[in-house]
Length: 137
Image 1 (cartoon, rainbow, N blue to C red):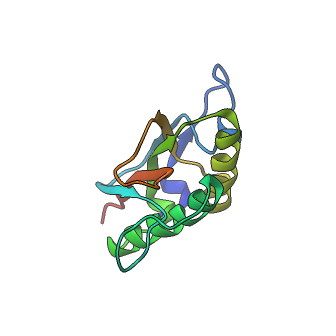
Image 2: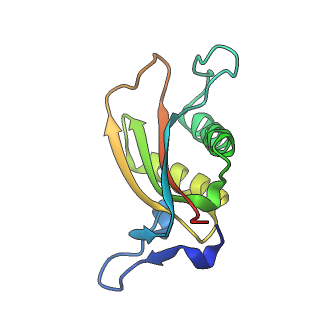
């Protein structure tokens, strides 16, 4: 999918969401593909890799990219993210926003961030899922 197939909407009547790593609304023609939560995991065992929040956030987009590639898609196809942060605080939002801007550039997907008390496995501090659009053929 090319950038001109996605429509990003950030109304002037709402705050600029780019510093937080997302857009308010994204639409695109085609088939929806749902990518399950991805986290900084060991490729062989699925166990969370040791590390602090920033280290886990840095690794998670690569895992998301592999899941997208497995479906024949890339980051350019993502229209929505769900981010889950254990013990969320303002400093973590800055880390996440920076990491997402590195992956998505200025074409940021819509995102919902949820602060949670725990994730599926001990040691997980961050998880990200996505909705992508397979372009219409």
